[in-house]
Length: 344
Image (tube, rainbow, N blue to C red; front, side, top):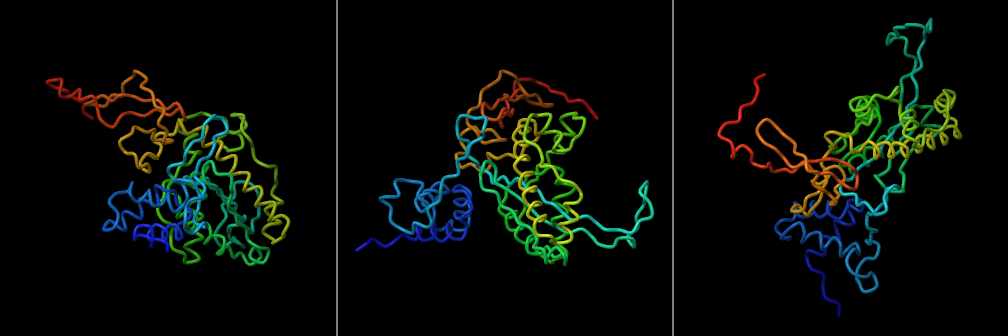
């Protein structure tokens, strides 16, 4: 007679079924916060999650629902010789929209009124992938949906994946992709996705560098990375008319954009200031981690970072190349009688 499962095991199995895409540590944190009367700590909770998913011990000797087994989220950066574990859920995202159609009487320096708009824009396709993951998620409108300009189905599916993300990476997303997603969601009376942090590599390019053009294709060409697939305005016209083959081609074009966007982000990552702190998603809080990639391979570079009243030891990450400083200062203030700061 088999031993009955404990309350902790049953709770862990239930959450693993409900949230199969959450990382072990992220799911453990959620379970613990919602069941503090059962679990002693996040680490205790994480142990049960790992047992259920088969991340501890051999599958051969484990009992339970094998459908709950989940591959560990270890992925490879092509330029590294070791796996980089993804701590935060970082989503690389891009969308494609139909053009506006308007009645105009010229092509130079036109001020088009709202009354001249014959047909407004809508979403044709979206594509996304989790950082380092090989699988790419995408959706496109059907020919019938394109002709009726009904993108509700694909907008709803995109909102679902956005709700899983901790960080969303785009190129010009803060001005284009994200507001447009929100607009279509509002039109369809869909609820907003759960909060996430945005990284816009176009803003990084403008703030940190001086490329002749800040278009993604040009930046990647200059960096020796993969570039966009060739297309022209006719593709957008055909998609607007609901032609099946062009819609499929648009989706492939969109997917390629996401792939090259990931390369751009990884090349720029050490330069993103401030980068969202991914170490907040790591359970071993007593260990120093890189805030940009979560890596532990940090070295003291011998230089200090100075504020108006204190100094901090600077660290460099051997994994991603980012620089960071320790949270605790060197307590310079207590060693000096007076420290003045300049007035504004």
